[in-house]
Every structure is written in C-alpha cells, then in structure tokens.
Image 1 (cartoon, rainbow, N blue to C red):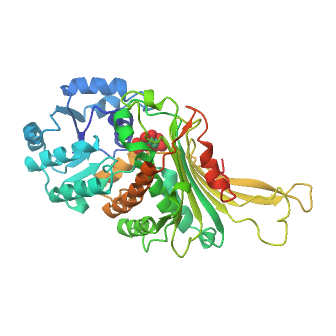
Image 2: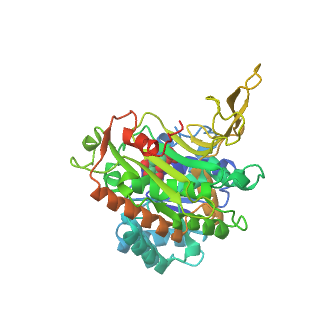
Image 3: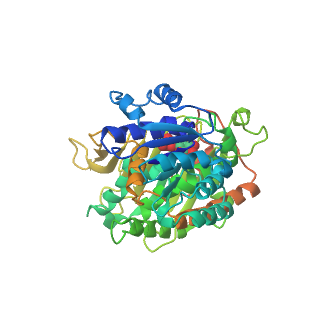
Length: 455
Ligand code: BG6
C-alpha cells in the first residue's frame, strides 16, 4: 500500500497521480492500493471527484481512469499532530496489504511530526519504506538533525530520498552513454574536455510557492539537489558495477572533490527577477536569489582544472535543461586556422526536448579544405516516461539506485552552505527582467575564462 501524505498538494495532483495512473496502465499497480492523506476533510468519493478534474487534464489516456480511481482512498488526518494518528492505524490494520510505503509529499517541516506519528502507531515496521520529497531541509545542520531523527525510526535501507531529476530518462542515459561506449569515455578527462556547462532555466516564476521558495532560493531549490545530481553523473568515475551502492559511492566522491574558487565572490553570480518581491507570500524586502550561476571544479585526477559552470533561474525567457560537454579546440596543425572550425560538443538535452547530440566537423560540401560543423542526434522514438513514473515504480520495487543516499546530501549541503554564506557577504543581487535574459554578470563569469555559454 502506498500512503501519500500531502495528498491535496500540487505535486500529488500534477505529478504523482498521473504517474501512478501510467503505472496502473502498465499493470505495475496490480497489488498496490493508494491511501491519500491530507488535512482537508474529504470523503474518498469527494477526493476522487477532485482528482478527476485536477489530475486527468494532465494524463492523455483516461480509458481506465475510473478503475484506477477505485484504488485510491482518502483519509483526513491532522498530520502535524502525531497524537492524532489513531485513524491511520485503524485503516492500516483493516487493510490486507501489509507492504507499506509512506510517501511524504509535504513541506519538510512536517517530516518530523509525520515520522513521529507513524512510529507512535507502530507502523515503522521492518518491512515499511519511507520516501521524502526534496528539499531535505535547509542546511547541513538542519538536514543532519532531521536525518538523525528519521534514523531512530527507519534504517537507511528503508529510506528513499527523492530527486525527480534522477528519474528523467536522459539524465539516466548519461551513465549509459558514457560507460556503454568505447568512443567517448577515453576522451572524458582534462586532456580533452575544455569545460562543462549545466543549465536548468525556467520560464515560470515562483507561482504560488512563495512561502517555500523565499526561504530556499535557487541554491537550495535546484543546485543542492538536481544540479549536483546531474553534475555527479556527468563526471563520476565508472562504478565497479551497476549496483545502487557502487553508483552512489562514485557520486559521493564527486561531490566530495568539488572545489569552489578561493575568490568565491568572483565565481558566483546571484540574481532576482524584477517583480519577485511583489509575488504572493514573498517578503517585500526579500534578498532571495531566483537565479544563480557558479563556477567550480572537480579536484580529481581525471578532471582537475576543467571548469564546471552551473546556472539555474526562474522567470527567464525559456525553459531549458541541458548538459554541454565542450571539448578542446582541435590542436593539430591541420584545419585549426579556419574560423568556422568548431569545438566538438556532446549535449544531453533534458528540456524542452530530450535527446543526445554530438557535434563534429566535416568537409564543406564541394570544397576541398574548408569544414563545417554538423550534429548527430539521438532522439528516442518511444514516448518518454515521466520522471515520477520511474521514481514511484522503483520506490514500490525497493530499488535505491535513483534515490539520494544520505552522504550525498551531507556533502552537497557542505558546499551549498558555503555558497549561502557567501551570498550573505556578497551584496550583489543582480536584477533581471521577468521573462527576459539572465543577469549579464553570468556571461562575464565565463568571459573571464575566455568562454561563453553554449546556447
Ligand atoms: C523542483 C523545484 O524540484 O524542480 C522547482 O522545487 C522547479 O522550483 C522544478 O520548478 C523543476 O523541475 P522540472 O522537472 O520541471 O525541470
């Protein structure tokens, strides 16, 4: 049984229910029923009516919708009050499915009372699993305290920390692309790679999430988790096997070897879109960054000296998520004097389209010595599954590979805490136009190194 806390929230209706429906259509939910828990006082029938209108606008095939909805029951619970969990105990006791997965799709300040409530009714059994939506709190100190608290009720094996970026097909494909081919990996080092750029820009602003976002900002909302996950996959050493533990070991090594420049202020850029302070539930004096760009390095044998540039921001002109691996310029004595010879690049594009492209030079048609740059592209012909479909599927199977291990969170916070601290001492928060371009200072960050963002 999948027990979802925060069932009337945005994530449940927009992502979780459509993903569960998709699993249902693939017969992957045959033995799983869903108990949706929220503070609102719905009856199950009312909740299903709510889902009919709120969720199914997002799913394409509604033919089995009604059968699927029958699998979902609703329970109203004072989720912030562990003493009020008795009704949950009664429902779980009456249910035949004893394989219970608790999914905490709530703000992280509710994690502790929910864990306490579950433990209080005795359902933190050895077979139970518990999944947490990000963010895993606010900084290293609060995350460590939360982790220590959760560890009293559940073992690491039972804990699944979600980062939906890792469930995206192309992000998973980074490993396969790198380690299933002989063509690329021998070049994946500082002799050949010039720089790496990871971008996750969004056109949406904070929408109705001001309360959360104003305490979070781009560093905590995107960099500490999503961008560091992508970065670790892009630069990690080959794991000794494709097991969850081996992959996590390598990812953590990457985060541990990240280095920020000593002159940190010149390696980070923060911005805030105009009008952010007027958004609902945002402080009118807010200095929260809605854009962040930074330069760092992985201090290891393979990639020492290769700059890695990250940028992410809200309310920008377009939604774009991609990883660009830029190779050094052709250093041979041939062809390299031409203006039109381009660097080789590998691009993992995640949004708005998913695919992998390799850029290389060929002879210009009809010419003898001139070249031109071309792209070879891989685009999956099958439908891309939603990240949450994969995340939920693996959660129900109990496979940890796509979830975040505690040590990765710990190491990530160490760096992000340092950056947050720098933000407090580095007063510049560049304004940028809502729906426009990122602050120019983010271009200068690369220009300083003689580089530019590859669009
Ligand atoms: C979430 C962040 O984790 O990821 C949001 O909290 C952000 O602020 C979202 O909008 C982006 O996810 P995606 O899959 O749309 O790129």
